[in-house]
Image: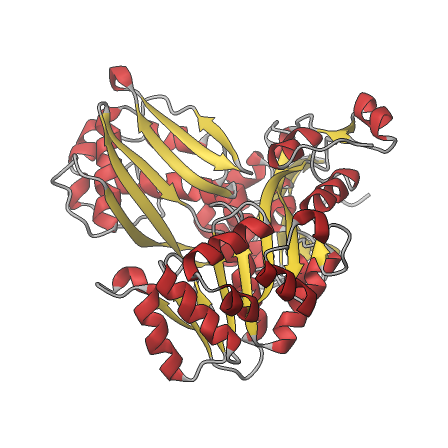
Length: 515
């Protein structure tokens, strides 16, 4: 048998452009040993993800995911860098590769601790003279800030909190899949924490002098997939400044069909996109995915030749084909007076980030009732709560009835890890169906959950619905079972029976029985 030569490259399994392989799944295939042979910057430069390193008959075999041809410059560079035989698994979707590289390298559990250990007292003291950003792990405060944010984004965390405690200790918490996840950071003391907070202030271009006033701010974080906006809030406590950062979605905006809506709600939403008039109202608490749903609708509409204008506070992601206005950067401009100006721009579609007062509510509803498509959001747990919230703001039931076309109330629940979930025998016997529960494994960081699932309630406004609303007889009891209503309980039970969520988390949204 011939020995393996270090100058050979073989092409193995091909993942086509239409493959549903997720970046996270690909990143999980990457081993630490393989990544040590190819650094993060080199992996990004050549867009390759090291997967495994094996010793075959005295020769080292490095398997990578990439999209390069045998004999290419990338192949030769990898061979020179590693001294290994390179076996390539072709992944033709470039964005999957880029995202998987980011997740694999920047989501390493030990990377944050390593960044802290690299810091020296001199590095902390001199942090003000250092550049705003650095992607290099050079043992500086800017590098630590970058790593804290990168780690959270790679884990799909929605929030990062750095909380000072007594005795000079600080706690690092990420909100992942809706749950608070503390991260142990040995050596991250109050001295380092204050420098991290000051670095965030510098990035947000706010004063570093006063630690005893609340501060809101934002800045752009450069990532391989593009710049991402970070919103932050600093609040004084008796132990020092508490820092909270709202982390952006790292992945692309999903299409409407990829949101995870029930078929009934998806049909309602697609009908509204075809109509391009009326009001789509998204209800839910903070962090329920309202903005993602709204952006998905706008992204779909932007494929047509229509005038789309958005008013946001702040703009969370840039959308092609949409004229976006960031109200947080405009002093003295509110949703109400901005809406009045926007209506002079001949818009077909208007996105209002949130209806907060009676003026913006009334103007938005008038626009919806006169031929525009308005997409907006309100805080409310259920469909009827969202409608009542708008009713209190607008104080005109008939205008509200004419303007509203679709209300969706949504929540995000932790998704059961498909690799380790098991059937809950007692719950399954009681329900007469297969009910799953969480276990925990390396793929889900031993939490039992990986990602989140959208569950929703929706109401499509028909003549009957409008009439009942005006007369004050629109109730949940009347709506249950109607063709134009999707109940939250029904969505939850479907998610449970499909093995996507567990009963414990479902009952946090609404109590119900399996009978």
